[in-house]
Length: 118
Image 1 (tube, rainbow, N blue to C red):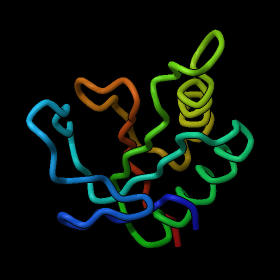
Image 2: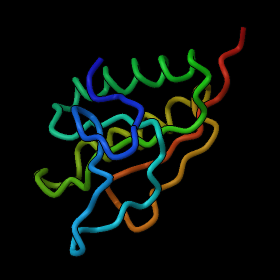
Image 3: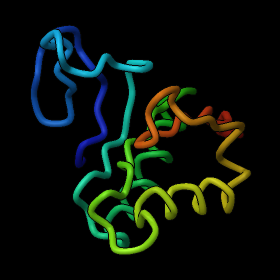
């Protein structure tokens, strides 16, 4: 299922953030329990994963998810995954109720998902 996971306290594994930080390490901004990590993926692979995982989270009734797209510092020109994520959000108003950047972190966006109509 890729790197879409629920965070667990203190444990670190695939798709999990390290919740124990050294003094000089940047503090986490929001630490939502659910996230999709698109780092290091090609644009088309990231698009497929984003679409699939948002659908999975909506089916589970999860309302708020952090999308980690990165800042695009390794992209030539504009940030590829960040731009793709913003375009996907704009093109899917039937799935996304609202979105906002993570404070002090240009590499993530928080989305509030619409409920699945039954």
